[in-house]
Structure formats: structure tokens, C-alpha cells
Amino acid sequence: MDNWMTTCNNDEDLVISSRMRLARNLAKVPFPHKLNVEKGREIIKRVENAFYTSADNEKEFKTNYLWEKDNNERQLYLEKHLISKNLIDNSDKTAFILNNKETVSIMINEEDHIRIQCITAGLNLEEAYDLSNKIDDFLEEKLEYAFDEKWGYLTACPTNIGTGLRASVMVHLPALSLNNQINGLLNALAQVGMTIRGLYGEGSKPVGNIYQISNQVTLGRSEKEIVSNLKAIAIQVINEEKISRENLVKKYKNELEDRIYRALGILRSAVLLSSNECLRLLSDVRLGVEMGIIKDVDKVTLNNLLVNIQPAAIQREGSRNLSSSERDFNRAKLVREKLAVNKV
Image (tube, rainbow, N blue to C red; front, top):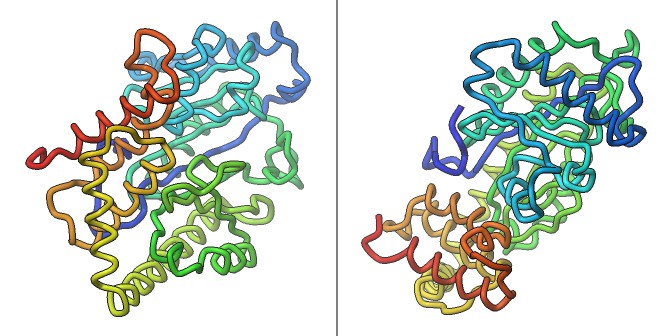
């Protein structure tokens, strides 16, 4: 699978990434929130012992123990969409197994004992599902899962019971946002068992017109049905976005191009940029790239900037804790360098 930050599979595709997440629990063991530190770390060891029975896994993967990481490192993994906030909140007894390409992350002792996550570039749900399913089958051969013949896989949260599968796509929807159609989309998705959230999923606010669309229902539907339904919905949303863009061009062509070029001009010259302002401007530039208006910026650069302008990523480059103003200065400097004329 391709890393979404370094690959753009389809220039016409408005989907930035596709993700699969399988929730699993070990049989006859309390859910993670009921485990103390000692018991939690025992679970980590059990999962590791099962996973690393494969020589290939030993070569390609590494376990990261969150209690050994400082807060900035933890936040950086979150900004890369490799772990969840819940994993960080319980860092004294949580870990994740990460592959070299950073496309697979197996979280241990998040809300459930095991969260298998596969994330790849573009609208590529089938490949992400196939790999997550392969890892799940491998672990299930060596670990006894909590499973009920009637209810399926048992999970800490009832909304995940059944298949335990959450599929999602991260998609850029600036025209629907500009035309105030997002609330209508949210209501329409809810009626077909889908939900729409911000850049970092549940609990996050939509910034930079980037949204995550995922299934709400895991019980009563097969994994393949969930994947197929989400793909159909994603294609429909993309078509709605494209229609909305066409309408914007028909009515406000000059204003739209002015907005896009102004955003690029600010990003190429600003001395200070907050993360929210930067994401908003990058959304306008991405719109220009997707519509063929801007030709000297590529999507891979924009995908990288989605992560590298975040607070922990900016802080990573400093030898000390940076103030908010210092982060804004370093962020603007980074963006100027990445979007410099003739850079591409």
C-alpha cells in the first residue's frame, strides 16, 4: 500500500486517503479501561508474541510503547493519523505496532485490546480492507478473540459490535463548504448510516475543508457490504463536489481564481501563519491544483504540509519548547520553502 503523505494515485481523485480499522478484543479479559498498568502491559506482550511469530513482521514492523515517548512524539503520531487521542490518554499502558511505510498501525489497549488500522492514498478502500483482513486473520489464528455467534465481535463500545469495522475516506470538499451544502450533506449521510467529521475524526472540527466520511453501523452488515457502501457514497459525494465547483466557475470564475491566487501569494510570502489559517489557505491552493488553475504545485507537497504544519511537527524541528509565535514563524518559513516558485 502507498503512504498517503508521499503518493497521489489519481490526479482526478478528490479523496486524499482511505482507511480501514478493525476493533478486536481478547476473550475472557476485561476491556482496556478496566485494566491496570501491569495487566495492560501484559496484553501488549501477548499481542506482540502472536504478531512477531512471522519473520516478515519482525523485519517490517516495530512496537512503539507510548510510555517511552514524550508528549510531542505522541502528538506527532496523532497528527500523522497513525494513532488516536484515546491511545495517548492512556499512554502508561498503550502501544502500537507500526510498519516501515507507516501504512499499518496496530493499536493495543485503545478502547479495545486491538485496533488494526490500514491507511493508504486515494480512493483505495479494497486494498486497505484486504490488508487489514489479512492481519486480522493472522492474529486470530494465534489469539482467542471475544466473539459471540449472535452479535459478532464484542467491543467496548456497542456501536462497534458486529464486524468491528470502521471504514473511512478523507476527502476535500471546498465547493460544498463555500456553497453552504455541508449541513445538508451531513443529514443525507446520516440517513444512509454514514457520518462526516473533521480532519482528525471523532471530536475534531472541520478545518481546511477536509472531512472524514465513515460508516456508523457495524452490526447486521458484512465487512464487504460496509466497504462497498462507503465507496459508493464517496463517489457520490465527489460528484456532488464537482458539480458544485462547476457552478462556482459559472457564477464566480474571476472571484474564485482571485481567491485561489491570493491564497498562494500569502502562503509564499507570509512571515507568520497559524495552523488554522494555513490549513484554510492550503485548501484554496489545493482547489486550484485540483481544478488545473495552479500548475506549479503538486498534491504530494500539499499532503505533506497537512501534517508538517501541525504543532507537534513544527515543534519537532526545535531544540526547545517553542512559543505559539515561534511556531507560527517556523510554519510560515516551512510553507514558503515548500511552495517556492520553481520548486516543482
